[in-house]
Image 1 (cartoon, rainbow, N blue to C red):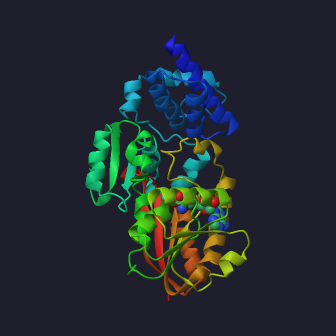
Image 2 (tube, rainbow, N blue to C red):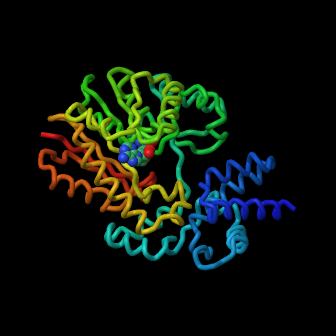
Image 3 (spheres, helix red, strand yellow):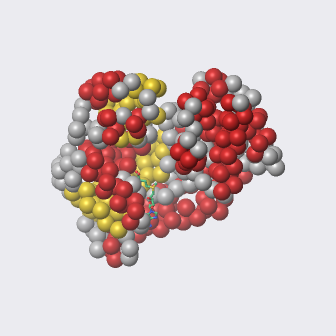
Length: 374
Ligand SMILES: C[S@@+](CC[C@H](N)C(=O)[O-])C[C@H]1O[C@@H](n2cnc3c(N)ncnc32)[C@H](O)[C@@H]1O
């Protein structure tokens, strides 16, 4: 009876994601709410099997005409303990052939190791909001809430969530004592502010919901000035809500509704972050369903946006100022390739340092480059 329920619910989630373009997180959240799935074993099984199906989509027959129910049945043949224990290492990467070819071209000899790394479950990380609490006290508070966390070597403000109660329901989360943020993404704000000495205008020009802006605000100790920009007002509204909750008050938001918004800032910015839209090829572990939607055209399209943003927004940087270009892609053509093309067109910038974090390191695939205007 329970098996039947699990099969039906899993098939419903997979169908929604595969055929209706719904995000996996969203489909799971909706099914937990709408269908009132109360049995904790079924909830747990669904949240393990649904991402597993998409991490192994092609191996299970997706993309070659197999029915959803047959894909789901094949996945459910694998015992839940194996999926939970992260023990399923595929023999080959689970991607369409065109992406495998592209990865060989872009990543060289390490392509297979990196694509296979996406088969494991993502680790979950949080960042202490040091404006409100020390990491040590946060660990105590989370333990009282039955959340199992461990310290992360070399990242004093980061914790890995190893199990226990779901973090979103806890008192420390509701009180804004922490942010959920991948360990790779946590490297960007310190990379941007490496030479920040307590003064200078900081702009996060592709700020989205504010993951990086909040970290920047925290590192600046709520002093100085950050302008967070984006094309979408609803994202900036969410950023403001999160900043309020986190107790960060040095962020000002600015909607890019005309080209003038950026032009007005030419030559004014000391630290500019361009966390540009990208293919998301570094975060397949977290969003395994995104490989079903990606096409060669969508990647080309996003590369044009990156080049355009780099070319126009870099004019905001003042002489002597810093520009950090970041993506959550593993493709060289979106990363160092973009930076090199930019540098040859704009010799007034020099590259100080760049860092490519690959998925085999355990976190999301990420790239960041710090350039300085002469
Ligand atoms: C990778 S996401 C940023 C994530 C965000 N920085 C964070 O840490 O949560 C890229 C963002 O760029 C925004 N965007 C896309 N095109 C843009 C443009 N031309 N100018 C500014 N923002 C843009 C998107 O709306 C999206 O929020």
